[in-house]
Length: 181
Image (cartoon, rainbow, N blue to C red; front, top):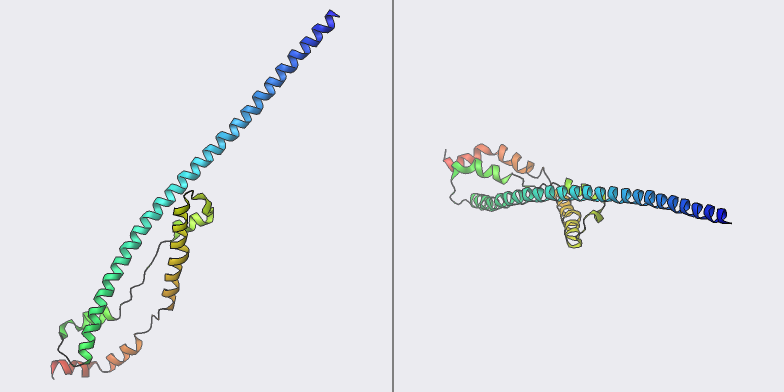
């Protein structure tokens, strides 16, 4: 009987030892998966942060582009006033005609860099943890920039062809009015 108790005690201690080893292995694998997931999350966060920084720099360039376009449109208003005077036979500086004509026929089209947003879109919007930031990004890129794209497509790039034909055919007549040949 004593031998049977020793065998049972030995068997119990072996089972406990194997169970402890099994628990250590399972816990080690679990920790490995957790560490791998944590590293993956850090990499994802770094990637998202880098993309957001790139988006920030792109937006800075978009703002500069918009400011240049606004300045061009302000000059365009002056140009329209110049040609309004010209059409109504008011005194204008003929030496500036070529500059004003160039500005009259100049296009100011806004160009946006949307590649950082497209990168985030491809990864899924949920990579942006901040709900407010995510909503603002989607509003800007998916709505406002798309509206600008539609506006750009509606611009007739050849709208000055009739004016150019009239001016070129009558250039000497127009010039003689100012020079009094």
